[in-house]
Image (cartoon, rainbow, N blue to C red; front, top):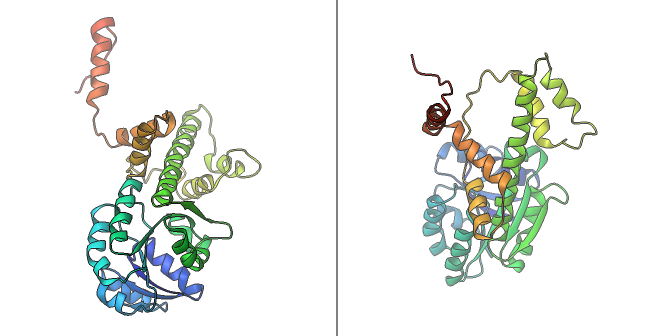
Length: 299
């Protein structure tokens, strides 16, 4: 299948590479020309603009966009929509907020263009292992693009979720669950690290991979990280979030769902970014005021 692809970041580049490996013809564009030159070496057709990309597609055009959520998506649509014809298809494969996806789908529909949302999971390992794909939108268009989904995903690793927005919603919740799982692993390993024993966390994590109910790909990645740096001395205890956890918590509030674990894991990430916590100072001050409990002061 011939497809246009906008965005050659750490995910997009490998996705195009995988499509090329599966025999698809890909026209690729990226803001950085160097990425376009690199993907051309792998067999892609390079484009020097969005207009050039669309011009190199024929028939019913399919354009996959893989750009950061928010304004970059809307900016891309501003350029792309006027260049497409009725019944052409845009696939948003990034982590967009599902309510914004619904609005973009309505915007595209007013131009007669179909907007599919595709949650994409697999990270930097997707080229080798494939990507789990969760997509929503007009089912006929999703079926039309299915050869691409099949090539990007491992066997049984892609699912049509329903109307516009459902793909990004499912991916959002997927990432919210991921937040909770990662936090549980992190807390468990800290308990073991603080234990009054000389425990080999790498070997323990590796053993948990065989027969344990907590085995997972995340645990496999923990083994990899601990093998490279057993005490994680090279890392700062600072954890960023890219938005999906926040959207999951907001959606849980909207739906009256008590998402305790996901919410706590998100707030823990916020806490990791504080050099100094005023809240913790206030707690210490209050304990000292009412009970005379000892406090630690700055030198």
